[in-house]
Amino acid sequence: MNEFDAVILGIIQGLTEFLPVSSSGHLEIGKAILGDDSIPSESLLFTVVLHAATALSTIVVFRKDILEIFKGLFQFKWNEQTQFSLKIILSMIPAAVVGLLFEEEMEVLFGGNILLVGFMLIITALLLWLADKAKNTEKPVSFRNAFVIGISQAIAILPGISRSGATISTSVLLGNDKAKAARFSFLMVVPLILGKIAKDVLSGDLSESSTEPSILIIGFIAAFLAGLVACTWMIKLVKNSKLSYFAIYCLIVGIIAIGFGYAN
Image 1 (tube, rainbow, N blue to C red):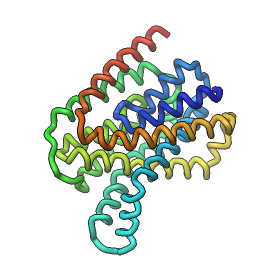
Image 2: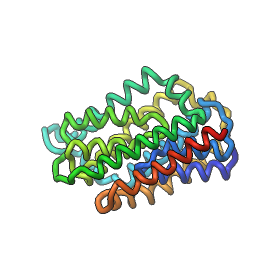
Image 3: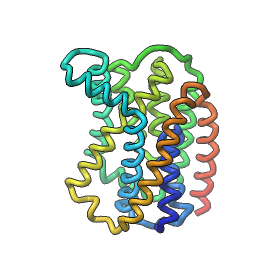
Image 4: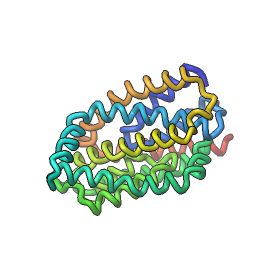
């Protein structure tokens, strides 16, 4: 992988992390097109770095919300901020369990399996289409909803299943407000990503890769800047547009990915 590839993949990650079209799926497709032949562990390292960049962009965009949550926690009261924080923690449990128990199995999936990505993108399209048919409400995310949405986030570890698409669609299908569903979806992934990075640093996994630091830095910057733009734009887009447009896009890309996978 060279610097140009890092920029392209960084932009793909930054844009697709917030669009319900599967950032991991697009990264695997991008790697296949660019001829990235890195082994799964190295590929996963670069993916983790890009996810860290988009996590930072989420923190920047939602900095006021995050500050309010921390203020509520330190007041030691059963207020809205405290409840929201506990819902975020509850939503993290399924993905954390999957990540800890099936880490090696997950890494293998990030090895350029374009056929898998294609089929998972079609599933994402179906989820978005179903969510588009659901009526919008003003219902907030409940504790039970938070755990169910967390299960969707755990399933979305698979490349091709959009994390934001799966979590937002699940939340909307549970009868929650679309804007609140999007906000919850974007915020719930931040502690999970930071936890994953901390685990990798402490375990020494990141030091085993031969990927050049300059490649990681360039990819990080590209993903961060693209993430800032995409996150701000998506907040408005989820409120005002239909998920069916993304469903059609995922269906088309999924079919193309399947064709590309069979051709190679």
